Length: 418
Ligand SMILES: Cc1cc2nc3c(=O)[nH]c(=O)nc-3n(C[C@H](O)[C@H](O)[C@H](O)COP(=O)(O)OP(=O)(O)OC[C@H]3O[C@@H](n4cnc5c(N)ncnc54)[C@H](O)[C@@H]3O)c2cc1C
Image (tube, rainbow, N blue to C red; front, side):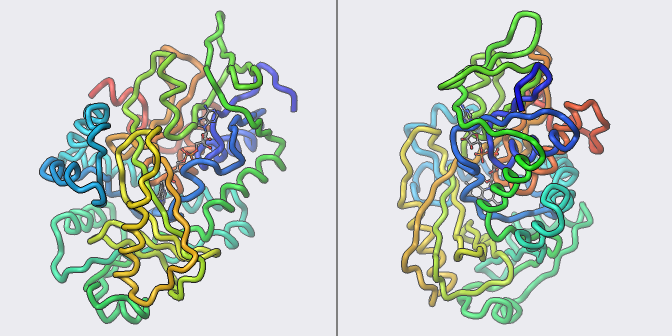
């Protein structure tokens, strides 16, 4: 497919970029995706694969401010800010804390619900029924706690679920032992959210999006975008490490790196990376039928087709600091505590960059000063969930179709207005 002035360029071949490209291509648009890495090279490669259609709980909740000292004091805690990076992250962290006010939490929860509720539908729409049943398990997710009573954050999560009419089922210690043989007796209670699920392989599901895009006539160019140059009279030139592309419309879906492309255009939105880690256990000797999120220790476990994935932790340290493998080792210690008989032989560590906004909502839409430039990033902890519905929304915005849901809560302008 030759690039013409009507070609849409999508920068980034993660779950968000490829989903957007696929929706656009299937709507009849010419699409070229640019990414130097074979898909999925970014956060979409190593996430926990949870598809949380029935989750509408933002990351920032009331009471965050009290926790700041412990974030700074404990480099291996579930949420750590590298002291040297703290001054740079401070403006974002302040917005994050502000997003934890209860009135704002309720608004964010409504917007998350509106976007997430069609996650399985969009995955199925994109993958088709055969690929969907091969790759996706809509079997629910279980959250567990190592305490008998309900914590204040668990109570708030329950309130938000009830407010949104999301079904859930309380589980006692005996239920958990039946569902998950070998789980430690320290795990006391749980909640099953039956409307959630997971993919058995985030890498393969995104590679499938890539294959489907190529089959539909889309194209992936293995180049790195250096700069987006607005053209006199409209449209953009896209300068890459080895070439030059031209388009009237561009979608920036470069995950945590998106701001590096936008800052030279004068576009500043609050995007920070919450670095996360995973440990893959190829022969875990633990067999799960659903994912488990351990809320007392802030990590998740997903049964994947190539082993057990233990994922989590948030580290605020920017895009350039090297990984701190001690955080992955802490995940290893956590899984050994939750499943004392787990076999961790042959384990492998990974780190990825969650592209996170302070209000847990992605940034989707246009900026007035840059016509034809669309932003599609900022999915934080929920890209495998919100990515496909966001892609549908952005493709509808580009095609000037009805968006189906109110697009305002995700618009970049919300940050300048607040
Ligand atoms: C440990 C961990 C666990 C997670 N678990 C879950 C989960 O269970 N469920 C869930 O819903 N979400 C989860 N997430 C979040 C999810 O992975 C992300 O929100 C999602 O992958 C973001 O997708 P993306 O396409 O925006 O970014 P990415 O997947 O990071 O893709 C961005 C792409 O842009 C490319 N790019 C960057 N700069 C340029 C450039 N200059 N030129 C060209 N291309 C460029 C990169 O190479 C990359 O391929 C998790 C994340 C982590 C780290």
